[in-house]
Image (cartoon, rainbow over all chains, first blue to last red; front, side):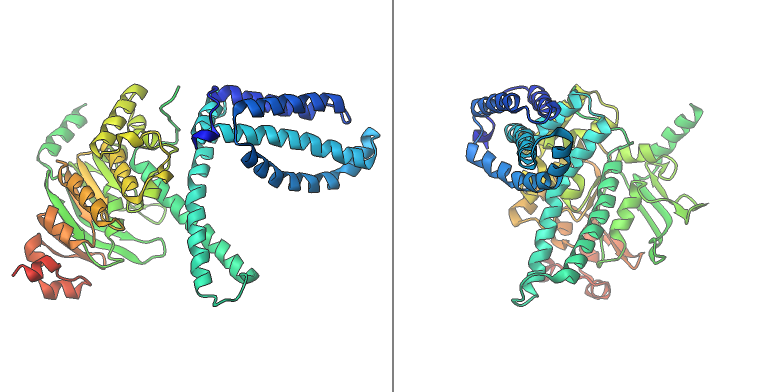
Length: 206
Length: 262
């Protein structure tokens, strides 16, 4: 992990910088190639300076880029119509912008531990209830993922070599997972109430 | 204020935990608790044993005022749970301050992003200032031997460590009654031993729901057997757990140490 976050900048600076960068990219008119090029160079410099693991960053980014390409192909027609660019250039423009924005966010996420990110969000004025909800989501994502893994393993153990789950089994798996998540929510709420929860999120920072 | 001083007088003589005619139905209408009477003196360590589905966990939740004392939406049940003489259905917040509940699955109880935040959750909610809450949380982590895990996310801890963080989080609320649901379930022998020593070293009144009868012999002088929502036996642990007929009738088994010890 330490090689992943050598950049000891305040998380607020990183978060505000990344959001500002995204805005700068999004607000440029279509076809501002030179402007986007300068932003791309600036981002590349920041990424290199951050000392983030570049192969890992690229792997994550390329995963997102597939989705971006798909969406760009869907939306390029309308952008081409309104901007006067050719369809191909409009698609390239979309991929470039979204790619840059995603790169900025992915790099920021990779150099900022989640607890610091939450702290930065709270300090930058995110409503406490929303920050608390994000905290819960991140905490229980892993618990639910473990639960799902156990369920699929148990399912595979009884499927005797038949590949894939089939829609019926998949649907019931998702249903059971939802039911378990609701049960867990009840228990977590009981545990919170037991320790004095009254609906107001309180944290140690500030 | 007169009311408060009257409460203080009652709590001086009242048992730490008193249940009288406690009845509770699950939301689907099945009866979970069917007239439970139980009284636990301050400082006493009591085990609550019984088969799966006997109503143990449900009983524990009542001690914290976590289940509604109502039939359906409107009809109030007569009060049936008192903690230090306080009616749990009317003084929920104060009762929760007195009773510390350690749940069976640590993932239910550790919901914060870091261990320190989690242990400080109780004190912060009970009105402690941030600095005081931090100090208390660190002190409680120290007590369970996990001070160096303070800044880690809970999911990076082992099951036994998470269990101890849960205990620290409850101790940070400084409860006078400690209620534990299956404290030794799923722990490896070393984790179990460590957890037992911790529990044994705490001076609070304890009520422990468990299937671990060896643990009961070790740290609980008194045992209560619950089956089908009713208390079917209540007495010194050695006597209750040596009664083969009674145990068998209620889905339990005589602990090995009592079998070989004779």
